[in-house]
Amino acid sequence: MARAHIITYGCQMNEYDTHLVESQLVALGMDMVDSPDHADLVLLNTCAVRGKPVDKVRTVLGLLRKEKQKRNLVVGMMGCLAQLEEGQQIARKFEVDVLIGPGAILDISKALENNQRFWSLQFKDELHDFIPPAPVDKLQAHLTIMRGCDHHCTYCIVPTTRGPQVSRHPDLIMKELDMLLAAGVQEVTLLGQNVNSYGIDQGKRVPGVPSFAELLRMVGSSGIRRVKFTTSHPMNFTEDVAQAMAETPAVCNYVHLPVQSGSNRVLRRMAREYTIEKYLEHIAAVKKWMPDVVLATDIIVGFSGETEEDFQQTMDLFDEVGYDQAYMFAYSARPGTPSYKHFDDMPREVKIERLKRLIDKQKEWALKKNAAFVGQDVEVLLRGDATDPSLLEGHTRGNHPTFVPKVPGYDKPGIYTVRISHSTPHSMFGNFVDAQGQVLLPVKASAANA
Ligand code: 5AD
Ligand code: SF4
Image 1: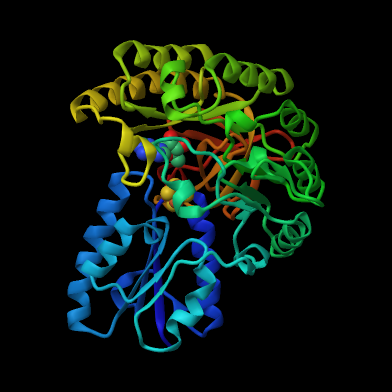
Image 2: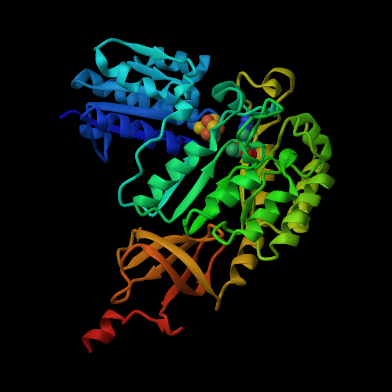
């Protein structure tokens, strides 16, 4: 049996697509293996959003090209980079055999049919209708509710790589959800570039497709324990989503609302289509409906033309909102984006220095926010063993990575109540709490031996 391995870069959409392609490969009789070393087929599911993941792909393809000289190996490239001229040049240089764009992933079987170089970049509509089999033995799963993006943020390559927005029909989503439930999945993350505009493709409401708020209520009443979603665009945020979240117990109190910058001037240059004032109104609505909401954001530091004053406004915004989590990036000028074409880049040192200051600020907030959980009982989905096998690892409803020592009877993946004992800016640590509210402390090996 031929063995295959997929290396995944980038976002959760890519993770979902990796799972989808894996299921296709398994259906073709291939065996998925954990390492590229012994695989006959190695696929790179690439990301093109910043220069760094592209550099990584170059390095790995260089190694794989050497490997190809030694043994029979098919190398493939999928994901966002595959859709770009930049990626196709890389593919030619490194003698990639199979190249499939984000809309062409169902072509993987065709690609492997004959031993010829196969490139496919066309978006195939049947992808929207395709329901991948549920993952095996997993408590968490992703579920794509839409593909593509209708926005044109000047820094972003995604509209080019993933095309215009297409919302999936709710019947398909609910069918896929039923399969996940039947397979024992307890937490689902609904995926889209911009879930808040679900059901409104290219500015038009799609017949038979509900709003995102209605979809959340539908998914939330399916019997699944936890519902999360990512990601939201503030431009399309509407208060009915916050209300649906608050009124649907399964939906987690976690909101990822990428702001990108605290300066209206920079937001205009980014073509984000909202002001900070508007953004803060959305945050206020979210906090009104869910006072205990966990807030996360994305920031691009050092966007073209960002002054020290603009950057200070981003720092001030962090103090105003008090984010629990933030994904912070230095601006990376990507060929093919409007800002690459029309704006100048700034010196790397300036970007890195600002990024460092923002990360320090965020650390202070995360430390403070996470410390507030110490002593509290929280619901944690523990997905399996941590690197240290005496611990289980997982996350809270607010996406805090959490670690818990195993105790007799509490050593398997599942959803548990955990009393938080201490925290850092990045993680929380705690102990199981039993049905009587008793904290279950691990018996120290030394004490057990005494
Ligand atoms: N440079 C840096 N970060 C970027 N992002 C998107 N494009 C770029 C870019 N050109 C960030 C944004 C987005 C996240 C997925 O990646 O913050 O929300
Ligand atoms: Fe995901 Fe964007 Fe990277 Fe594509 S470019 S993999 S959509 S993060």
